[in-house]
Amino acid sequence: MIASTAVDLARAQFATTSIYHFLFVPLTLGLGPLVAVMQTIWYRTGNETWLKLTRFFGTLFLINFAIGVATGLVQEFQFGMNWSVYSVFVGDVFGAPLAIEGLAAFFLEATFLGLWIFGWNKLGPRLHLATVWIFALASWLSAFFIIAANSWMQRPVGSEVVDGRAELTSIWELLTNRFAIWAFLHVILVGLTTAAAVVLGVACWHFLRGRNVEVFRHAVKLALIVLVPVSAVNLALGSHLGVVVTDYQPMKIAATEALWDTEQPAAFSVFQIGGFSEDDQTPSFDIEIPKLLSVLATGSIRPGDPARLLDEVEAAR
Image (cartoon, rainbow, N blue to C red; front, side):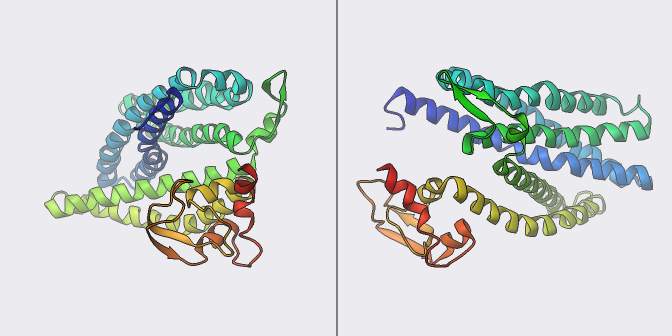
């Protein structure tokens, strides 16, 4: 059964909503700046090809943004519907960055997005260009406050529990959480990678169809200029995020790989069948890369380092 209790059902529902919502988030974070770059090139060169690309990918951005907002609103409601007790306990802390995101970043983003949509023939070229950059950067600001809220759940800082409720003691500590900084950088680079890949894929589809080849050749160049270096940087940054997670949540790293016993060094499973429950800890089939999990989790393959992966798991038993 998917859910045998109300809690399991709430988890399954919230997980489904979150996963579906996040399908649209990276594309929004990455495509907004790319559309801004396209419009900037058109503004500076006067090349109508870039104007066509701005309008084309701007339309895709708007569709993606609208669906992302709709799924995000459902997710917000589920904090109160599925996790009302938790929301009461952490609301004074968890709600602060979310309130800033909603009242400041999101409204800034939505306002200037509206000006961009309806201001093509009403605003001057320079002012209209400013609107696309503002809503693109506001989407990043919005992402930061959301990640700050999420990161507090992973590494609670700037707060203390008073009379059975978490209370905020330092907004600065909350917003400069080490977990949040690394997660935010990783998510932004993921967004740029996703958007560049989508632009490249759409352009290649037009090449196969033989449509507007000259127009989309420019899109391919821009996509590759972004995709190649950003992907390379994010490999290193994302790898270090694994080290950050291990510093604060070693149990999470162990759980993701279904490690039941301490390994020194720990291997990474490329493919595994079985071994995912306490009653069935031994996989019936497993393809492993030796030492790789230790490298991802600690940045080292020294014998003593991977042991901390399961210390917390064993202590919790």
